[in-house]
Image (cartoon, rainbow, N blue to C red; front, top):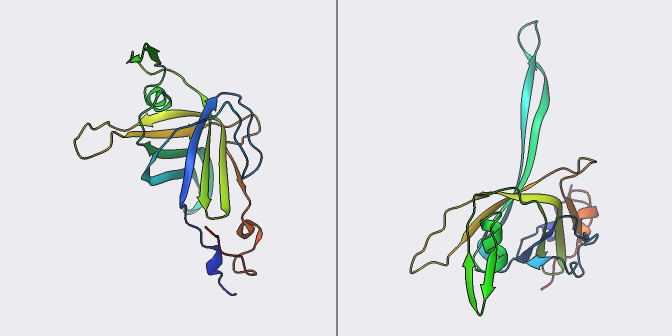
Length: 195
């Protein structure tokens, strides 16, 4: 079976978005996001990391103690990225339940103990003319990294978003206009992405 180097993708650039819960969701890989969504801003060159994990329980047979089945007991989908742009959106994501208030050009962030803060999230992943759009209808920042204040580094806000399942079990949607998505492995020639 021939290999297809034109189907190798690199996440050259992209963006992260957030909106209040139940915002109007996109249904295609490209096009404008609904006005409820806010671009988070600059993200570190580590990009966005998607993780899918599952815990399984082994069922052993009485005869010989061999594993006869594995049952998925829990699963989780998360997305991690580090915002390096300091803005109201990022500060309020990092400090869940806290709000920035600004009066006469002066701002204050009264940091409260974190509480529930479910929102809608989205990501654009772009390689030339190849687009992947990831939509998380119901998600929440569930982990944050340390903030380091240092003279030779950007102040950075590491965020991990957990995607929660909807009533049909869907935790996220991925849309793409990339021809490689419809091609079987090694099947046919896929045009390379163009800048």
